[in-house]
Image (cartoon, rainbow, N blue to C red):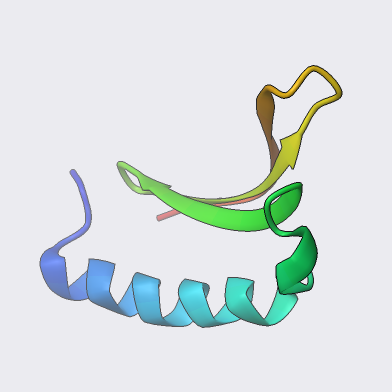
Length: 66
């Protein structure tokens, strides 16, 4: 069962604010950034990094499941 619309709005506000405070300086965000995603009943916080060959890698940092 996925989150309701009201729960998704709250997650976006709370987790979005949490991630925004911890993101790196704007100058380097194209190389390294912190992002979050909602998958089913889980909220994931991930590091988005550019590798030496130009590809991107999402490295999991934290996950919480309701």
